[in-house]
Every structure is written in C-alpha cells, then in structure tokens.
Amino acid sequence: MQTVYHPANSRGFANHGWLKSAHTFSFANYYDPERMGFGVLRVINDDFVEGGQGFGTHPHRDMEIISVPLSGDLAHRDSMGNGSIIKNGDVQVMSAGTGVTHSEMNANRDQAVKFLQIWVLPRKNNVAPRYQQITIANEAKPNDFQQILSPNADDAGVWIHQNAWFSLARFSDGTQKRYDVKREGNGVYVFVIKGKAKVGGIELGERDGLGLWETDGFDVEALGDAEILLMDVPMDVEANINQLH
Image (cartoon, rainbow, N blue to C red; front, top):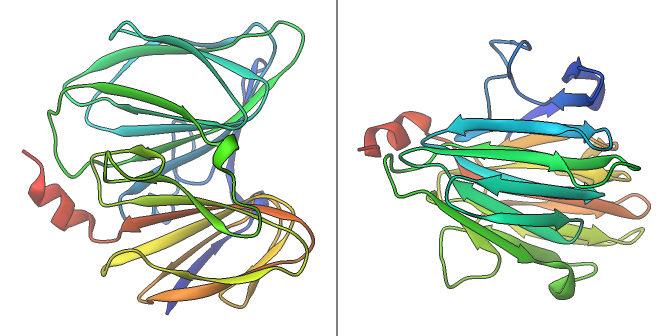
C-alpha cells in the first residue's frame, strides 16, 4: 500500500475578505507541483463565504463539480435554468461537459456558509451539462459508510461521469470498520471533516487528508466522534485522458 499525507496546515490558503479558502491541491494562486491532485481527483477546496457574498456567474467545462455543504445555506443558479438552495445534509453535482455558467452565493446575510467544493476529471469530454441535487441526511448511516456518489444513476447518491465512489462515515468514538476499494486501479483520498481518525494505521486530525493506493482496502477507526469523507477514484489519469473524446 502506498500513502501520501497532507496535514491541514500544509494546504494552500487564500483570504479574499469575503472568502476564505483552503486548497488541498494546487488551485488559483496556490501552486505546488507535488500537489496537483490525486488520480482524477483534481480539487478539494474548503470554502468559508461571508454573509451575502459569493461567487458571481463564471464558466466551467469538462469537469465534474461536487459541492458538500457543511453549514449555512448556499444558493446555486446556472445557465441550465436551475436555481436552488443547498445546505448541510445535501450533496450537489454539476457535470460541466460542453460548457455551463453558474453562481454560488451565500443565501443569508447574517451568517457564513461553509462547504467543500470538489472537482473530478471526467472519463468523457463534451457530455451534455447536467445538474443533480439530493438530500442525503435522511439516509445517514451512523457508524457505517454511506455512499453519496457513484458512476451509476440507479445507485445510492448522486452520479458522475467517472468511475468514482464517495462515501461519508459518521463514526462514534472507537468505531472501526474496513473500507474496501470499489474498483481495481482506484485509490482512496480520505478527508477528515470533523474529529480525529486512524486510517490505514495513520492518525489524522480535523481537515487532514490521506491518499491510499495499491491496496484493496484499509481500516478506518474513529478517535473520538468523527465525520470522514472517502473519495474512491481512478489513479491512472493518462488512461482517463485517453478515453476523452
């Protein structure tokens, strides 16, 4: 098993006043040639947006963009005609495909919104743009892995154009379970949202990240109550690029 550890304080940080963002991987003005992603996982941004502020309308294409709200309310609008509010307990995905514009604004003026924005390279370019939003809170599985994303429209969670599976683990203190990698050739990037955990024998604190690959699975143990996001993604970026058309 191979691993790469990214402590929370090693991330790139941007402070724009209205926006504070921590970048696990190179993004915008933060560039580190050793931090260009993990397999097809390209971006994990940990965003804090002040009340009444947000990202104005801007374009994307050929990227799978996933938003996981942590607190507050995030207002979404896009060129496909979607307008919605997402909050903790929801998950949202936008397949940018041939091109889409969207905005993300804090829906409230009196409180901040916090969310993770995650970008995954698609296995196919030039798809028709699409939007999906679901509430996952009602299906939450305490002390188990809850799948929130997959490649399959008829599976649990949202779906994307990639052989990727995301799971949330809300573990109480001392809970230990084995995670089995979903697909041969995939690796798993583990991001601790809250608390502390031991993953593959390595202790992680809040907002730490750990990539694991060349393994078929590993143990996850909560050291105190913990909330953990596991992103199971293809590691061979070149093979995925060769599939793009």
